[in-house]
Length: 235
Image (cartoon, rainbow, N blue to C red; front, side, top):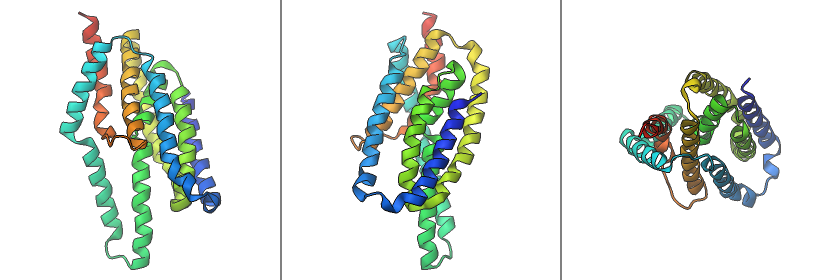
């Protein structure tokens, strides 16, 4: 049973409800500080994943190849472009009052991408499916709960509905992981988790406003980690 996925979805629902109900009572300085605090938590998640590394040369090669592929495909640009199109579609022929509401819809779309296509979620789901370890998804659930509260102060209860598409996307990834689990060696699993740690570190740098790394463009690193680690084991 995908316990981590279920807990993560429940955390978003509860956080969105709490933000919608109590959002007006949260001080502005706390809302501003939250992204940096989430960045620190992402650093901890990165360290947790990096400790699984087995073959450093394979991980480095996978990171380089995956980053180049991600930049070539411009995954982050495609996500941003899609969000802008949906926002423009929502704002078309709108009155001033409607535009203000549509801006909230645009914000909602951005949060949807963050929760459903974020690296920590994808890594967490694959990690639970491959190894049964729910620690990463549980950690993400805590983060998502507080993030949902913060965003719920502006978007309202609508934030809770993000749990629906996230649940189905994560369940699909979980099912896929079950097919590839039997062919994973210990080295491949360790290097896969370590590559996830690299991506989590990049996310932490971005959230902490240290370096604006395009984290989505690093997602192909996970795909390269498996064949590169396998090829390295044959040497």
